[in-house]
Amino acid sequence: MRFKDVFSIIGPGMIGPSSSHTAGAARLGRAARRLFGAMPVHAEIVLYGSFAETYRGHGTDLAIVGGLLDFSTDDSRIRHSLELAESAGMQVVFRIGTQQAEHPNTALIILRDEQHEDRLTGTSIGGGNIEIIAVNGFDVRFSAHYPTLLIFHDDYPGMLADITTIMKARQLNIGNMDLDRKSRSGDALTVIETDEPVPPQVAGQILELTHVHRVSLVDLAQGKEAAL
Image (cartoon, rainbow, N blue to C red; front, side, top):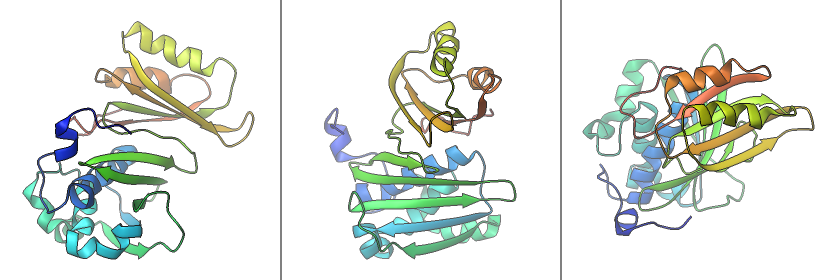
């Protein structure tokens, strides 16, 4: 991913000493929270590379959990996120990953409640920027820098045409799209980054399509989770 301006290198306003280990980590946690759509009951966080080696000293643990509580990178409550998560009823477990990761600052975040589980793998690539590299077993990539729709659906002819027709009617411009499927005619995930905020009604219309099972919206510019 290329940095677009000097502010991408300096990093955002943040709590903590490192744009990669704290600001980026907080954004990873927040992206996972937005994917999940609510505060999870249980969070398992697997850290790799330098995240695993220095996470306590750099506050990466506090930052990821702060993101799971939907705190922005400059929210002072991040300093107390572990205690706040416990008070809110979120059980948090940290593990050290043993496999070789794609990037030194990599985290696998597994969120669960009584109904479902989500898995998001992401990297913190500098300046507070992140890249999501996998979601629920699908190899998809997105930056979470733009409003992003994650559409879980069957691999079915015309699926993308139906989705983009809805977006065209709302004059939503697609900046980037990625798709992965687990098998031919099997489960698929389409990820669409847009230039404009995505109205909840658009996600609702897409969810009504035959062969669409679930729609999540990851928009870190929004102060609150969108109601889908």
